[in-house]
Length: 117
Image (cartoon, rainbow, N blue to C red):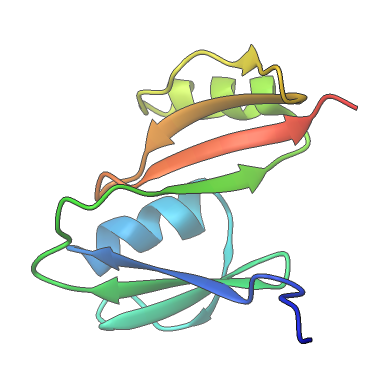
């Protein structure tokens, strides 16, 4: 039987490509593989996984979360809050991760986490 081996990409609908690229490229420092502020579709690299942004007039009210691992959760939290972003406080979870949440410019929830092991 075939099995899933990895996530290749995640696609988010965004209202403003310029705002979204400003966040993912300029704030989170992800490398743009395709597209720019005027594109209807852009792709960024997240350690070999594609984060795709698709421009749409309707991002809907669906809920979802992207979990991004980082090497220093508290440092990322300090960086984002000092840059004006509203984030929950970092905390340790019973499942063995330190994490916090925030929303991107289109309201998609992002968690920044690292293993406590």
